[in-house]
Length: 335
Image 1: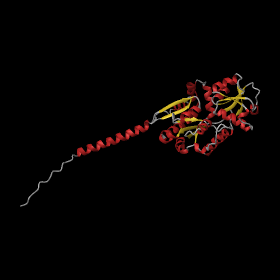
Image 2: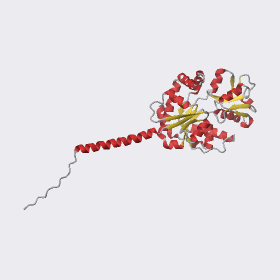
Image 3: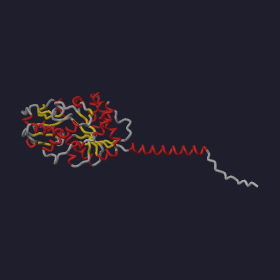
Image 4: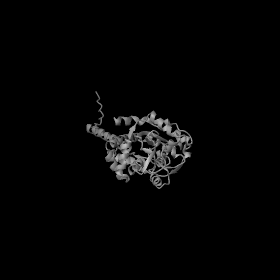
């Protein structure tokens, strides 16, 4: 007799069940990817500059449209305060000059220059001016005189560089450190013999016609403006910083093609006459340049002068200040 054992029934898995499971898995993966991507995009940038200059620039050029991350702008009255905010991580990236950067680095601030904007240094872009009726006629006449400027500014650097070129130092003149508006008033009232300043204040003085240039920064100042980030931002927000520097590159390209339009927008934000900004833009022709050996050497020249003048406790190797890894993204966008 043949005994037939009953076969155990295997549960049938419906193909609809499998299809549903696949769909659920796909939805979960899409959700996780979207969630992670959204969180990454939501990590925004905190940007600092003097008198909101970067915000004005990017808004005017349309470069704040379609941002894949949020940006918060902070406005500071001076580059020194921008450097402090960078050092304390209150902002991620900001605009600094060589002096404010050097002084911050002397205090061991973890900052790096990731992009450089070059402005043309015309005879009046950065200059030492005197009242039109002043007896001072040439740079040599500045020895022993009262020079007003903003401490740690490009004006301060120019005055020191002029004195150094003459074989003198900052000790051979009397410096009166004030903000530009106060310095301008002091010169007009005779409280100072000369004012060492920069655009747009030189353009303003040029339009008013009450002063004349006694020394120019044309061959003494490189004209570099540095977009500087703290190391923490570079480590955690590289994609945002890369995108931001590209937008700045585009913005300056737009400015040079729309100088008058930009001047009107600047005037609305600053309260200065349109013609002042127009002259400044026409003189400056700002554009982003790669970080190369020439830029590094320019910074070292400035550092060496500050050390010589006793304003920095020790020298800084300028090569360590720059991060050229952002160069390629900017060069791609400028093509």
